[in-house]
Image (cartoon, rainbow, N blue to C red):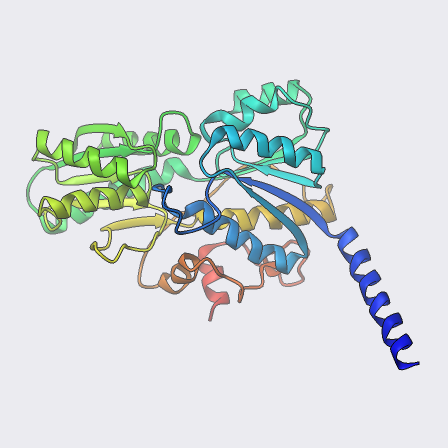
Length: 357
């Protein structure tokens, strides 16, 4: 008798779980990065790994079924994963238009009218028009204020230089790539600042977001132009490659280096002079946006928005950044940042920091 009751209760519980999961929101994210933070092939840093882990923290709070597919920086694999995700028919598909790969590919396949949201690197406005002309259901996008951070990084590097040296400021700029929107916009911000500053741009080149490529190019440029005393880097992986080159040349104390991502400093190197970050959080914010849209599309439509999230690493915000670099913000209740919350809070670095205290 007791066994029969236990069986009935167990089956009822399983049925309830099934019903719950059948109504949960299904979101698939095709991540351009790696699923492991220590993958040897990855010289571009752990940014996309952390984006996905923080998205899982948010998904748990929002009761979202999040399926992350990792492309391992392989654009051919990324196309296969997009095709696979469409077959699975999620409620929302989150994509990154890195090097325009996703946007170009979408015009060639049937996306079955699945709502598509672009994260961090959206297609250009002209490409979005083309995608909509092909009948794709592009519902919105979110990207950080990349142009602004490119300018801020250059400005703060110059200020750091002035506090340590009276010599003229001579900069090497190591860019991300030539085609990704984040790299293009950060470079625009850099060039805008340089056009009205006392900094001389000695050289600029792409490092393809890579620590290894940055190391090689920094070594070469410093041999050709030893007057370089500032290195502007499109991300922290590039910046740490530059720092490794400086260490080998015994020039760490003479040259200011800055990057973007808030990455942890390798044990063998000195910290960066400047690091901006915050955009690693936008994957979590994207899920909040999709959650709200699903609850009430008319009240909370999804725009194409540039979100002012970038903040310089400081002693004040180190507690949050430390947890981000451990890829775990489980103690934060991301539902508080949903418009459906009675005590809604704006999604900012400062408010997330307060939630840790």
